[in-house]
Image 1 (tube, rainbow, N blue to C red):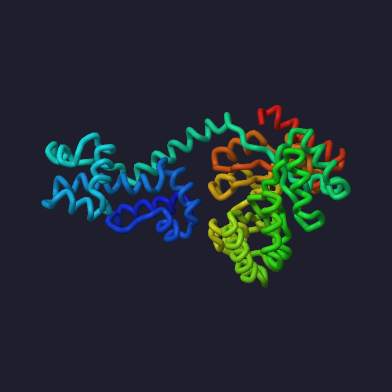
Image 2: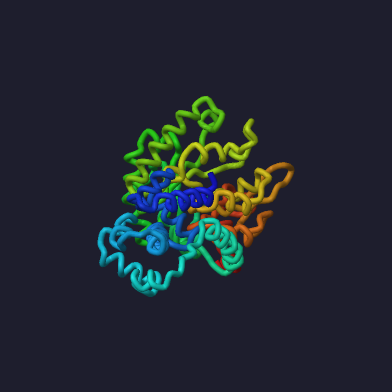
Length: 388
């Protein structure tokens, strides 16, 4: 279900159950979201917190009942969950600028904004935000896979060079070659922050606790599944097993204040028999509470799609995007520094800001014309020119 449709249904549910014991956690659970993610999404769409929305709706309902229902003010406010009369009077006066008694004497009905009005305002606001997004920037990180050979031979020396280029953050490839404490010590010494780590699906499933502990030591907020082997992909023989495993990993991450992501390639955009992409099945079968997206814009483009469209499609489920560029020669993909290939980088960055992305990660899978370090330096220089 579209996240905006979920918020629309949630608002309708709240409106129909104003007398019930409502809370953000209860409503989030009912619509299969974590409390944190639901609160963030609700506020983004409506412009107010869940608590404020419930309180405002209850106060408006009480105000109208004061004019229609022959009952005491106390009984009416209790029916809508205000058990403390002093708290109710203070909230009522704050919202309407007068006491309940004064309001009743004026006999003017309240016209509360409907959920349709709120959603219509959201869509109008989104257009303005998309325009304003061009003026905003997000933090940049480098995927260490881009300089993997250099990092394997000399991790500290390579990180020093990465830092000197202007990268303040990195995304790691965590395969256990270097102890987590050692990684953290090197990064802290260089004022580098590891935002996330790519971990092979089989490794994190068989060693979930160990991997999570390592990522916590390093300081990562996100753990990323870099890909799924064919048998684990939608339509594969072991897809159901993969779903079960990912749900367990996602739950373990959430319990440790971490977020599990899935990183796409081009094959996840193969069309399934039901005319949906393979990636749509994965995100449809696992809730955003347990699995979010790391969209690789390079592989999206390689699949023949517009990265901006896909970022917008998975809006509010993409905390990180991979920024990647390339050109095609003799049907082969040649990866290039950012801004030196076929990608419309400014459009991708604008869409990222507008759609709630939190991090931009530069990645170049291979570098043929120059050293990997020189390539990622060119990428950083290009982003600086754009004001990033």
